[in-house]
Image (cartoon, rainbow, N blue to C red; front, side, top):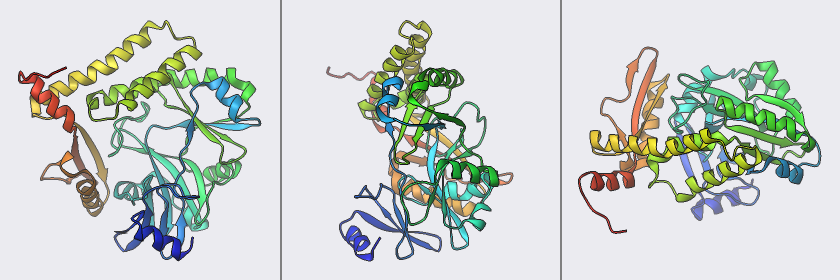
Length: 365
């Protein structure tokens, strides 16, 4: 990428300069031709490509037939947050999907994966998902992660290039360096839809989010989620019913209905009960929170190895969240080997509506 392109983006407000400790970097705020959102520039011109969006198929059989004429890999889709990890100079950094250096992920990466891969391959960028109940971004967590967070590598890239390393090369490096990785279920073809249906139902039963399919053409990637992952999303976010766009819920209802139709679950009474409970239980929790605390919010807890990174993350929350983020005055606090940060994201519309409703207010329909 040339300096003129970078300067033009900065002047037009489509990129911004940021600093993390001694590192100055530039992040692109939106997608540009050939550059996914979240692309960053290190130094003068070293590009680290953003992670591209992946298209979703909602009907397994027809989706696979339509998008894959040859073989493809099937990997687990994790419910967490996406980071790109690299070494620059003497330090390892983790960039968020939006192109920020994440103080939380940067702090924890050295204990979550073997960073020796950068000793032998300094040109690599590790693409991973960080998931678990103590992450500061996502309300949900894979059921098998009971505490804190874990990291799962799903792709490798090169600095200065778009695209990913071939799957076989990625798997070899993951194995060689003992990197924690998403589960890879092997290679399939579109005609193997019955095997994939059985696999997706196993994942559905264990509470997993779904699958990512990676074709031979590296840019051809799609994702397919389990039916119950939609119910899980609704259960986690129904307390945010008024603060999220309506499409968040309607899209998940459509996906669930399509999934139920394809997999013979249209008359599954248990599925119907789970869906109703997902909506109502979250709303009951929101009302409890309103009555107990005078507001509706979702609490988060995360831990850091270094106090400085906890303070950096607090600054990031204040800049991006404003008054919607509530942080106690005693944060962060020391707890054993870690600095713990607890905070709450306040749901402003639910807070206002329930405050009025539960104190006897009226509304016009």
